Length: 62
Image (cartoon, rainbow, N blue to C red; front, side, top):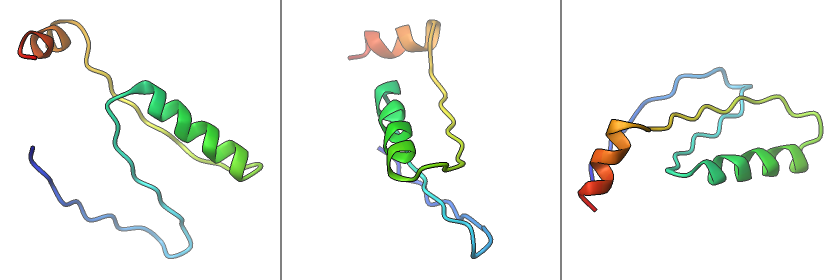
């Protein structure tokens, strides 16, 4: 496994949460936690999923 450090430049008044997951369910769990903990919260979530030939190639190596 390779770990990469990334600098995040943001305004001081911005709260920022960065997470990484391999499963869509974890992304759904993060969404649920945010909307239940902070009524009216505004946030964005991005999810990139590998599918097709790439996913199949990865599975054959398991």
